[in-house]
Length: 179
Image (cartoon, rainbow, N blue to C red; front, side):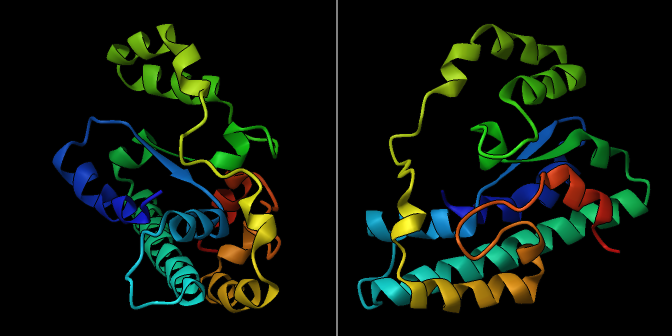
């Protein structure tokens, strides 16, 4: 749920070029709603401001990660092929796209060590203890509008709408990234 981990992708790629990386993206409204519900924000902030700040942070972090990945592709960096972008919404079946099995196959294709993961496939489908499915629906419309402006500015509105849904498979977005 903490989007700051995406800030490390370039460093991991540089330090461990043979390590496959799966970037799991989730609608920033769901992430921000979870942050607010769990109280993971400064006590001096209002829940509204914390929600909007988390969406803004998500957009900035993901925009930088996407730009870095695009640059690695353009530079023919071989580590870019060892990075797979997927979304929570696709893995849970809310929109057509990657399945958990496809992500596991990707990992196995990069390194046979990951075949042990395939043997424990059933463990991968359990829901998170902090998964507040449907939480996005309860977001105040004013919060939603203020936060959505960050998606529009960053370009992530191409993937995610203002109601909390994914518009298209992320693979489709990635084929047009940077264009």
